[in-house]
Structure formats: C-alpha cells, structure tokens
Amino acid sequence: MYLVISYDIPDDKRRSKIHKVLKSYGQWMQLSVFECNLSETQYAKLRSRLSKLIKPEQDSIRFYFLCSCCQGKVERIGGEVLRDETIFFV
Image 1 (cartoon, rainbow, N blue to C red):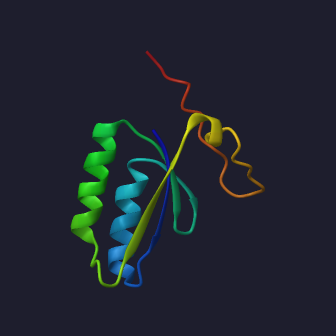
Image 2: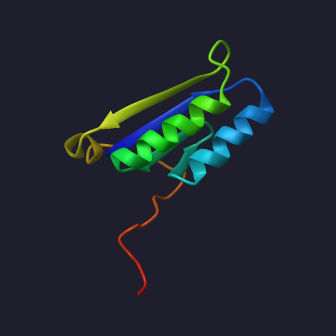
C-alpha cells in the first residue's frame, strides 16, 4: 500500500523521534510529509510505533492511502527526488 503521512507535532523532541521512525519506513518529501510504500504488516508496526510516541491531545499524524491509480497522478514540482527502489544488488 502506498501512503502519504503527514504530522503536526509541536514538541521538537517528539517531532524528531517521529521523523526518525518515519525515515526508516519511507521517503521524506517535505518538512512534515513522508511517502511510504508498505506492506500491511509494516504499516501496522509503523502505526503502533508512532502511536506510542505521540501525545494525542497535542499531536496529530494523518495517513492518506493512495491507490495505484491515484499514486500515478501525484504531481511534483521541486523538492526531494523520489528514490528509485527498483534497483537492488545481489
């Protein structure tokens, strides 16, 4: 599944932790936005890890699920270049 994940975390320390966790699952696109291509298991683990880090009364994390059709319609101008994840070494 392809997700766009955005977050609004006012505390610098918690925001850094969230960023670090998300960086291990996907690609950082903008200040508080990541794009991730995850299996259902990976998504469940990520969601669990993030929910343990936030303070729900202060923090917000949003998960936008994009179907393959919608993923192909994402248009970008500037910013981070998408990683090519089709290359692997044996």
